[in-house]
Length: 385
Image: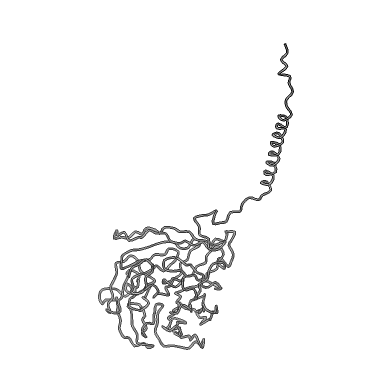
C-alpha cells in the first residue's frame, strides 16, 4: 500500500520561511563582501615615531633622546664611587627644530648649566646629513643632563678655547676660528672683538657690563657692552679668571692669586710650588679651573693635580684620579672638560657619575660652567646641602 502521508504537499507557511532564511543568508554574504571591499579600500594606520620607538622621547619630529644608565668608573684605590642611574642621551638630526636657550624661561635656570661646542652630526654618509648639521654649534644643558638647548648656530668655523658666560647669563664670550666674539642671547646679535690669533682668555665683571679679554699672549683689552668699544687694559689674566666681591682671582702657572680691585696689586696667593719639592716643569699647570667665587682652584701639571684654597692661602698636591676642569660653588662639585663622556664628582659625598650625553658625533672642545649659584650651587636637585 502506498503511504499517502509521504506524498502530502508541504504547507505554504513552511515554504515561505525557508525562502526568507535563504534570502537572509544571501544578504549576509553580500554585506560581508561589501565589508571586505571597504577594508581593502581603507589605508593602513600610520603609526607615529613615538609608537614605533617607545623607548625614545621625541622632542620634535626628527630629534629625540633616550634614557641610558650611567657607567661604572674604576678608581685605583678600589672605592666604589660610581652612581648608576639613567641620564638623557640626545640624537639631533635637525638642529633648527630643537629648542633654543631662552632667557625668559625660568625653568631652564633652576640648576647650574654647562655650555659646550658640538657639531650634532658627523656622519656624511647619513641620508639626513647636511653641511649645517655637521657645523659646530654651541649648546647648553643643566648639570644633571636635562634640558639640552641650542645656544648659537651661526658659527662659520669651529670654536676653540674656553667660552665664558656673563653672570647675568645674557652674554657669551667665545673663540670662533681666529676671532674673539660676544653673542647676545637677548637680541641675537654677535659682536667681533678681535681677529688676531691667540688662545681665548675672558673674564666678565660681576655686573656683566665689561669683558676683559686677551687679544694675543700679552695684549689685554676690555669691551664695554653699552659703548661696544674695545680699549687697552693693563690687568693680568690667564685662561682661568673670575671677578667676585670686587677682587679678581687668577689661576696662574703655579698658584691661585687674588688681586686688588682693577689693579695688578697682589692681595694674597696660594702656591703649590713648594721650594725643593717640585721641579718647575712638574709644577706648571697646563689645565686649570676655578670656583665661581674664586675661593678654590684646581690645576693639572704634566704629572700632578693640585688644589688651592684662597681663604687659607694653602695649596696641596691631590691624589685624585680626576681633575675637575669645571668647578662648582664652594668647590663641592667638579666636572670633566669634554662632553663626549661627561663625568661629575661630588667631593663632599665622594660620589661620581659618568654618562655619554651625545648620541651622535663627539667633541673634545672645552666646556664651561655658568648659572653656578642656582640651587645653592648643587648640581642635582636631590643633592643635600
